[in-house]
Amino acid sequence: MRPSLFKLCGLAAGLAAGLVIALPCAAGTDGAAVYQQICVACHQAGAVGAPGLAPSLVGELSRRADRPAVRAYMAQVVVQGLQGPIVSEGQSYNSVMPSQAQLSDDELAAVLTHVVVGLGGQAQAAPFKPEDISAARATRQSPKALRAQREAALGG
Image (spheres, rainbow, N blue to C red):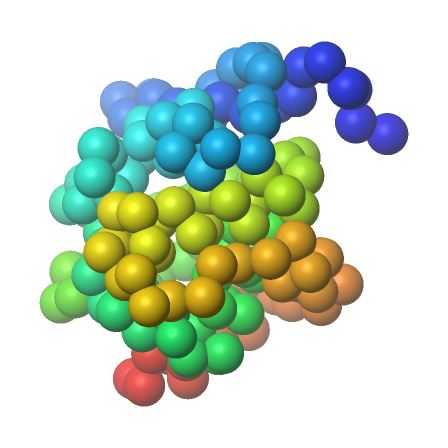
C-alpha cells in the first residue's frame, strides 16, 4: 500500500559513486512537475539527455510515439526501469534507469505525455492514459526482453 501524503518521487543519480538516491516528496498528476521531480536529474532540462548516462527523450522516441509498440515500450520502461546496453540516436548507453513503479498510473501517464507532447513537441500524439501504465504493470518482462522490445519498436 502506498503512502497517501508522500511518495518516493525523486531520484537523482550519484554520478561519481554510481548511486541512486530516493528523495520523498509530494507529487501530483502534473506531468511537468513529475518530470522536474524525477526525470530531470538524469535526462536533463528539456529531456535532451546526458551523454553516457541517459538518452534524449525528445528525439527518436518522441517522434515515433504515435506507434503503439513505442508507446508500450515507453510505459514498460517507466514501470520496470531499464538496464543494459542500448543505442539511442547513435550514442551508446549501458547504465540503469530505475523503475518508477512507486508512482501512480496517473503520474506515469502524465509524465510520458509531458515528455512526448510538451517537451518533444509532438502535439498530434495521443496522451498516455493510466490504462497504458496498468497494462505495462501487468506484462513485466526481463531486461533483455525489454531491450529487444525497444529494438523491434524503433525498427532496429
